[in-house]
Image (cartoon, rainbow, N blue to C red; front, side, top):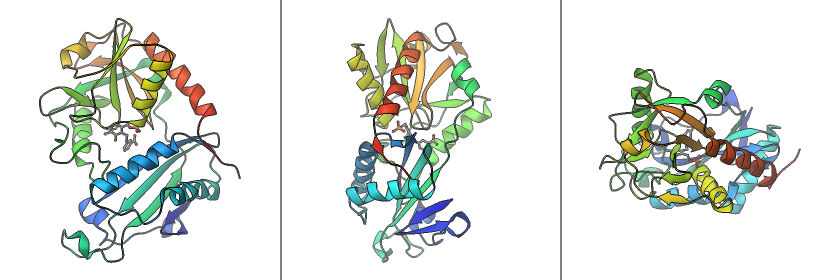
Length: 291
Ligand code: PXG
């Protein structure tokens, strides 16, 4: 495996950054998780745009242009001869001293690109659906650390994941500070009621997921009614279908929430229809590369 760090490729064992990097010391940095399908990088522009937005919000200047970054992602995929990959893009504040002050990171931000084989969820989860639970840890408040910023500080989500695992569940529903459903630890949430699609708006505690946006795009094309508004746990419990979306998981069914079975407790029709269309899109759309 060859890892890109600040303009050079390193073998996995030699791919290192300083322990003084504020990405490590404070979670001071931003990232993206991107996927390529059979030599096509899906929604690359959208991921790069979101990365730059996250960076802008935390006043981190990405040391390369968007166009250069696209080229570096492609170069990393070629270097690793990966047609189907999970790409992790990280921009960290860089090497500083043992204080919070980002101005002390004099060498400037680091750019790291890792391209690996995709670690898919077990097939069983797609066939049988996930059992998930609402956890006590609420999603970060937008006015504290806005969930739109994909920062290197994921402790909020990790705590929720641990709580779900402690309860023997596959995933966690995180609520926002008002008690509405926000999202899961690394996925957005959708419910279906009477053939209409509902997902929480991005304003309260929900990342504007790129897979979420893709599902909304498909729904529009298929003339499925979509509602982006607040969802309560009750509405999830009485939904006909529930599923999660994310770059890694794609579209994954949920069959049980907080001990309540959802719909027929099987992957639903709407989810299957959207998945079929999503898979078609990943075959056709994206930035093409070959080696
Ligand atoms: N919500 C959160 C909090 C996320 O971190 C999503 C939703 C889905 O967004 P996309 O753009 O991927 O549709 C994410 C995704 C993983 C993993 O390994 C995923 C994410 C972050 C870290 C790890 O599954 N982000």
